[in-house]
Length: 153
Image (cartoon, rainbow, N blue to C red; front, side):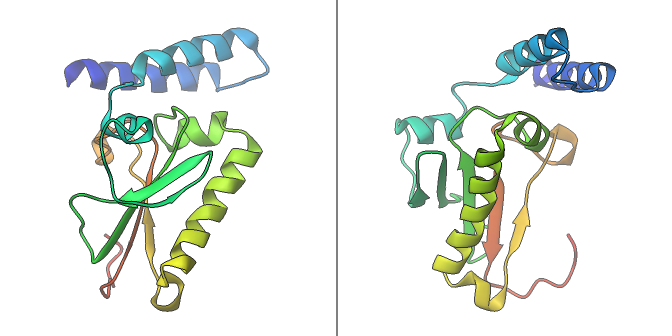
Protein backbone atom coordinates (compact mmCIF):
# COMPACT_ATOMS: atom_id res chain seq x y z
CA UNK A 1 0.00 0.00 0.00
CA UNK A 2 2.86 2.40 0.80
CA UNK A 3 4.42 1.70 -2.58
CA UNK A 4 1.20 2.68 -4.34
CA UNK A 5 0.96 5.86 -2.27
CA UNK A 6 4.56 6.83 -3.10
CA UNK A 7 4.07 6.13 -6.81
CA UNK A 8 0.82 8.15 -6.80
CA UNK A 9 2.61 11.04 -5.11
CA UNK A 10 5.49 10.89 -7.60
CA UNK A 11 3.03 10.81 -10.49
CA UNK A 12 1.32 13.97 -9.26
CA UNK A 13 4.62 15.74 -8.52
CA UNK A 14 5.96 15.01 -12.01
CA UNK A 15 2.62 16.03 -13.52
CA UNK A 16 2.81 19.41 -11.76
CA UNK A 17 6.49 19.97 -12.55
CA UNK A 18 6.04 19.12 -16.23
CA UNK A 19 2.62 20.78 -16.41
CA UNK A 20 1.41 17.68 -18.32
CA UNK A 21 2.43 19.41 -21.52
CA UNK A 22 2.02 16.82 -24.27
CA UNK A 23 3.74 19.17 -26.72
CA UNK A 24 7.01 18.46 -24.91
CA UNK A 25 7.97 14.93 -26.00
CA UNK A 26 10.13 14.31 -22.94
CA UNK A 27 7.33 15.11 -20.48
CA UNK A 28 4.94 12.81 -22.35
CA UNK A 29 7.48 9.98 -22.29
CA UNK A 30 8.06 10.39 -18.54
CA UNK A 31 4.36 10.61 -17.73
CA UNK A 32 3.53 7.59 -19.91
CA UNK A 33 6.25 5.61 -18.15
CA UNK A 34 4.90 6.56 -14.71
CA UNK A 35 1.36 5.60 -15.78
CA UNK A 36 2.55 2.21 -17.04
CA UNK A 37 4.36 1.56 -13.78
CA UNK A 38 1.34 2.66 -11.73
CA UNK A 39 -1.34 0.75 -13.62
CA UNK A 40 -1.97 -2.66 -12.06
CA UNK A 41 -2.85 -4.94 -14.98
CA UNK A 42 -4.29 -7.43 -12.49
CA UNK A 43 -6.78 -5.05 -10.82
CA UNK A 44 -10.35 -6.31 -10.58
CA UNK A 45 -11.60 -4.05 -13.39
CA UNK A 46 -8.85 -5.27 -15.73
CA UNK A 47 -9.94 -8.82 -14.89
CA UNK A 48 -13.58 -7.98 -15.67
CA UNK A 49 -12.56 -6.42 -19.00
CA UNK A 50 -10.51 -9.55 -19.81
CA UNK A 51 -13.49 -11.71 -18.75
CA UNK A 52 -11.33 -13.63 -16.27
CA UNK A 53 -13.61 -12.42 -13.47
CA UNK A 54 -17.37 -12.36 -13.88
CA UNK A 55 -19.61 -9.34 -13.49
CA UNK A 56 -23.28 -8.59 -14.11
CA UNK A 57 -22.77 -6.46 -17.21
CA UNK A 58 -25.47 -3.91 -18.05
CA UNK A 59 -23.75 -2.35 -21.08
CA UNK A 60 -20.68 -2.97 -23.20
CA UNK A 61 -19.22 -1.54 -26.38
CA UNK A 62 -15.72 -1.42 -27.89
CA UNK A 63 -14.54 1.32 -25.52
CA UNK A 64 -16.37 0.87 -22.22
CA UNK A 65 -18.03 -1.55 -19.87
CA UNK A 66 -20.77 -0.98 -17.29
CA UNK A 67 -21.69 -3.51 -14.62
CA UNK A 68 -23.43 -3.80 -11.25
CA UNK A 69 -21.28 -3.01 -8.22
CA UNK A 70 -20.80 -6.08 -6.01
CA UNK A 71 -21.29 -3.92 -2.87
CA UNK A 72 -24.05 -1.50 -3.86
CA UNK A 73 -24.67 1.57 -1.72
CA UNK A 74 -28.02 2.25 -3.41
CA UNK A 75 -30.68 0.11 -5.10
CA UNK A 76 -29.02 0.93 -8.42
CA UNK A 77 -25.23 1.07 -8.34
CA UNK A 78 -23.44 0.71 -11.67
CA UNK A 79 -19.68 0.95 -12.27
CA UNK A 80 -18.71 2.42 -15.66
CA UNK A 81 -15.14 1.89 -16.87
CA UNK A 82 -13.21 2.58 -20.05
CA UNK A 83 -11.57 -0.54 -21.45
CA UNK A 84 -8.22 1.20 -21.89
CA UNK A 85 -5.79 1.52 -18.99
CA UNK A 86 -6.46 4.86 -17.32
CA UNK A 87 -5.56 5.22 -13.66
CA UNK A 88 -7.87 8.04 -12.64
CA UNK A 89 -9.94 10.96 -13.94
CA UNK A 90 -6.87 13.13 -14.54
CA UNK A 91 -5.20 10.40 -16.56
CA UNK A 92 -8.38 9.80 -18.59
CA UNK A 93 -9.19 13.43 -19.35
CA UNK A 94 -5.55 14.19 -20.24
CA UNK A 95 -4.75 11.11 -22.33
CA UNK A 96 -7.96 9.76 -23.83
CA UNK A 97 -8.92 10.93 -27.29
CA UNK A 98 -11.77 13.41 -27.69
CA UNK A 99 -13.80 10.57 -29.23
CA UNK A 100 -13.21 8.32 -26.19
CA UNK A 101 -14.15 11.07 -23.75
CA UNK A 102 -17.31 11.97 -25.65
CA UNK A 103 -18.30 8.31 -25.99
CA UNK A 104 -17.71 7.67 -22.29
CA UNK A 105 -19.89 10.51 -21.03
CA UNK A 106 -22.54 10.07 -23.74
CA UNK A 107 -22.85 6.39 -22.83
CA UNK A 108 -23.28 7.20 -19.14
CA UNK A 109 -26.35 9.26 -20.06
CA UNK A 110 -27.54 6.47 -22.39
CA UNK A 111 -27.16 3.83 -19.64
CA UNK A 112 -29.00 6.02 -17.13
CA UNK A 113 -31.84 6.58 -19.58
CA UNK A 114 -32.00 2.89 -20.56
CA UNK A 115 -32.33 1.96 -16.88
CA UNK A 116 -35.02 4.62 -16.38
CA UNK A 117 -32.85 6.60 -13.98
CA UNK A 118 -33.35 9.86 -15.87
CA UNK A 119 -36.92 10.07 -14.51
CA UNK A 120 -36.14 10.32 -10.79
CA UNK A 121 -32.49 11.31 -11.06
CA UNK A 122 -29.12 9.79 -10.37
CA UNK A 123 -25.72 10.67 -9.01
CA UNK A 124 -22.33 10.26 -10.67
CA UNK A 125 -19.27 9.81 -8.47
CA UNK A 126 -15.60 9.35 -9.24
CA UNK A 127 -12.89 9.20 -6.61
CA UNK A 128 -9.57 10.62 -7.73
CA UNK A 129 -6.65 9.51 -5.59
CA UNK A 130 -6.06 7.41 -2.52
CA UNK A 131 -6.88 10.22 -0.07
CA UNK A 132 -10.39 10.63 -1.50
CA UNK A 133 -11.36 6.99 -1.53
CA UNK A 134 -10.08 5.61 -4.83
CA UNK A 135 -9.35 1.97 -4.07
CA UNK A 136 -9.14 0.57 -7.61
CA UNK A 137 -6.70 2.47 -9.77
CA UNK A 138 -8.59 2.06 -13.01
CA UNK A 139 -10.63 5.17 -13.83
CA UNK A 140 -14.33 4.66 -13.24
CA UNK A 141 -17.58 6.37 -12.36
CA UNK A 142 -20.26 5.12 -9.98
CA UNK A 143 -23.79 5.68 -11.28
CA UNK A 144 -26.13 5.46 -8.29
CA UNK A 145 -29.86 5.92 -7.87
CA UNK A 146 -32.89 4.64 -6.08
CA UNK A 147 -33.13 6.57 -2.85
CA UNK A 148 -33.64 10.20 -2.00
CA UNK A 149 -30.21 11.77 -1.51
CA UNK A 150 -30.30 15.30 -0.19
CA UNK A 151 -26.76 15.72 1.15
CA UNK A 152 -23.79 16.36 -1.07
CA UNK A 153 -21.88 13.47 0.49
